[in-house]
Image 1 (cartoon, rainbow, N blue to C red):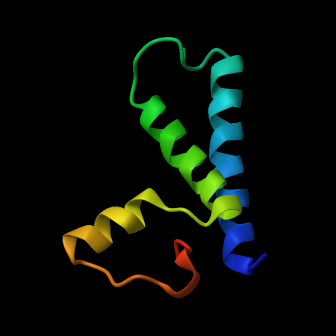
Image 2: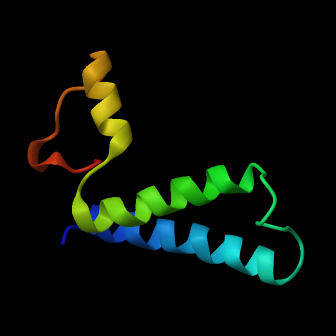
Image 3: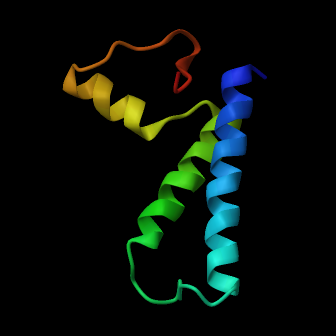
Length: 76
């Protein structure tokens, strides 16, 4: 694994852990539709991209012509 992959895994994990702590400390109710689900989606994508090297945003940007494909297909 590369340093970039470890960074994505840790960043995603910390986002998901902070959401869980917020929910279980009763500061926010994740069973209600809120913007916190958007944060959970970002954290989950960061976490999975560290393992799978698949980044949905990279795919979208390449199709829009904004970015060029990276070597190895990582999100870097």
